[in-house]
Image 1: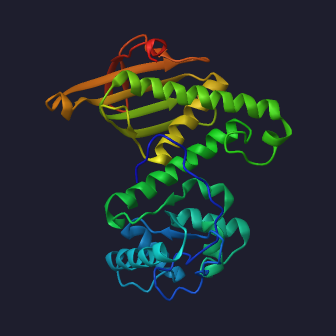
Image 2 (image 1 turned 45 degrees about the vertical axis):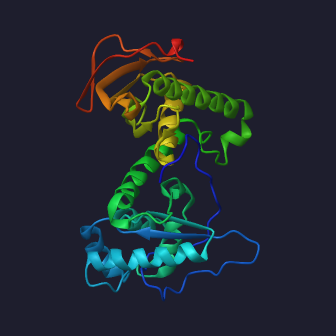
Length: 308
């Protein structure tokens, strides 16, 4: 799924189908007339996870390949019946810990339903629009879990003001405005990086040294000659959130944008490119020296202040 730069729309969810990939699943709600409903499903993303979860009776499939085929059939049916279809990685260890915490029996479908719509895990949900399940979508579910954990970490650092949860963000409107302003600055930093790079195929890697562990984000970007940007919504959201946390708390940070600069309009000429920026306060600037981040070497980038 790709989109123009923009934030993914949030929907209220009702549990549908749980994890069981069978068309006879008993937990699918029917669509109510005049009301938007969401179908939510957990997907096992590896053969090892499938083997671990079989003890809970989550599937009648004899093997993981059959499980994926059954799940794809269930999702296709859901697309015809529901306004919104969303999925998240069903992580066996996360599920076991959730059941222990809430005193649930992992073999009960109700336990899986509660796990899927657990509010702190909503950041891991992806909209499904008919993608090939075993292709790019399953790896995206894995990344969405990792991204969701990072979002929760960033939100914790900002006292809940990032994701708009209850608590201090509501009690302290001034702090909420401060975080919103930092988020806008972070979004503008990312925009200027891309505008300065021009047309091409890139990957952004971002690291912020934060209390409790580093915040990291990565995003793959396709930028056309007319300035249209293609990026997965969940990757855009994570990059902006990590930039926001770093700017709001003035934490040490580094970013590398690398890839192939150019376009088909320029006779198919593509040039390797890698730029680096750093931040230790309220602003970002070209790195003071060459940077190596996650194995990618980059030279100091262009000044973001000169990019409109």
